Image 1 (tube, rainbow, N blue to C red):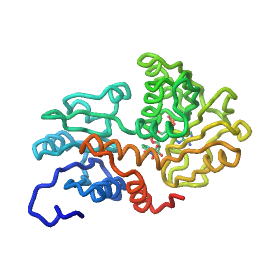
Image 2: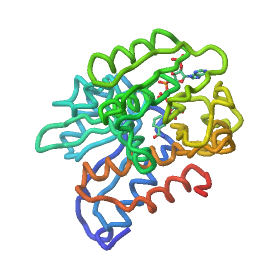
Image 3: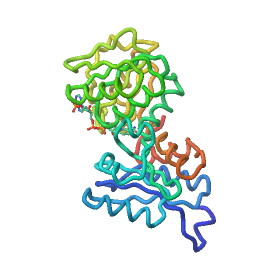
Image 4: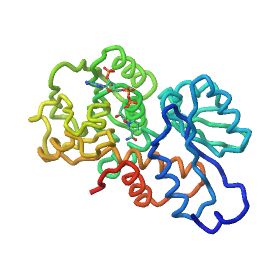
Length: 289
Ligand code: NDP
């Protein structure tokens, strides 16, 4: 900690509200950024039950929190407790990052934006055809950001029809991207016209051997393959895609970038990305290669 740690002062506060908060790797990552830039800020990991969320948000506001992240199960239920929403959070219908602007608490969604920053380093999505497996919270955030960033077409491939069709309805109704739903039965063949394929499901989370049902031969050089799963970052999906010559993007980048965007929102400082990625990998106990 910097010199400010030894003084008697009130740090600027941010943090995270979730249920099952223990072990949240974001704490180490954000605190590493504060240390790296000698910022007198603290990121507090807070266990909050659903029935206490309203009191917790009011308490954070009263205590001068500059913002906070929300994780399971608060990303949707927090919305009526806030004073406003950012554009993509409104379309996504979920908030994972609250930012204090004056006296107002504004809800943003940085999950999809974090993914977008990772992808854009490799291929900007404007005008691209994208295949996205999944229609849960992460996939929804990713799909909306890709559409708002100008993706030409997004194909949602999901096991449950209801969730998949709902997401396609959001994309068609609230963005200018073309969108189509494919029900996921058996191995999916990625069309030759696709530029990017993304695993936005939880397949592979904490299971490096779990297989995403995709036709191996449809993964080809020139295709960008990305995964939202961050632990382990070298998922079976990405290993297979890499073996087939695809350019690969792991889920650690998305997680780091959403933290980077949060720090930027709260402090106005653009934090050091490698320092945050190192701290995150250490907290997760994974290798960053
Ligand atoms: P949800 O529970 O909201 O959605 C899960 C999705 O995975 C659904 O589309 C579900 O399909 C699908 N799915 C799960 N198991 C299977 C299976 N066996 N076969 C086919 N489809 C399956 O979870 P989230 O969207 O919140 O999280 C998804 C992943 O994203 C997690 O691994 C999470 O850790 C990761 N994540 C990563 C972030 C990052 O920064 N890297 C940020 C946020 C999340 P169905 O609708 O049919 O049930």
